[in-house]
Image 1 (spheres, rainbow, N blue to C red):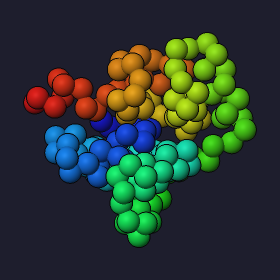
Image 2: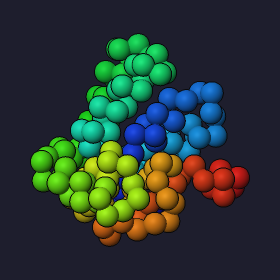
Image 3: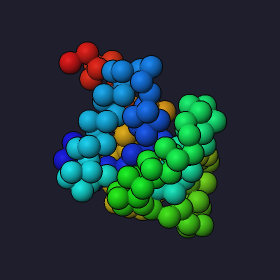
Image 4: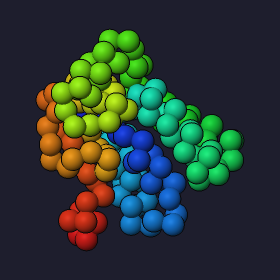
Length: 143
């Protein structure tokens, strides 16, 4: 794990998922390790998506979401710029990823991350120099 790492929204959501205790443990351990090593990177997009899911799907209180934002702001946060959106658009048009996943990959690349931690993309694939890694793969959960 000792590499500059981009954290996708689903990791933040699973950190709240008491109904998924294994995934919650993995998410919390990953976040803690990346925070302690100073290697975790988020983006404004990821924070917005987290807030939306936390409020609408998980129905967490606004104050709790605000407190979590205070924590997540301690990671490096990439501002999604028009230049990142253009790179994302290119990735969307040339790779088999959704537009929002392409923005995540473009943000990770812009922040010089070597890996994106997510379960939403193809585990092991390398896109634009960034390796996609699923922290919740069954191989990792069963160890």
